[in-house]
Length: 200
Image (cartoon, rainbow, N blue to C red; front, side, top):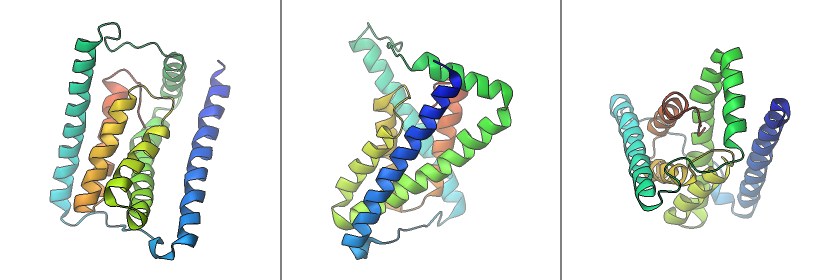
């Protein structure tokens, strides 16, 4: 597939996804005015939250590693190399962007995406839904939305587990800085260590 066409598809897909979720949440705002706004607490104790950012990253990485080992043991046919039509295209596209504009990759994948995605999913979505339904429903809903928002990535189960871990932190401790940090570190590892199959 033409790299430019692929880039357009990805951008349009993200735009449609975020637009539909945002419209739905604003509809809920009008129907249930009590849910307007969300808790924007970034940190309470800066050093504690920074430490927990590393902790959440290692927890999510450990869960992903255990899942990969189990899948390789139970389903040898996959062995971590499942067939995918989008994997070669996405990897090629990221390679071309990385070669031509490495600073752009760092800015978008390691800083902007973690920042805005965590505010959107763990802040905007989870907080609003927890005010209408239950915290548990909101926890699962934000994880599903986060996973559906990454249709071109490898590792759907890992993404869902990561979203659940981050969402649980948000539910229990309320702060956003640790999940933003952990998300950023996850992207760095996915990009440079796991083979550039980035789960942004």
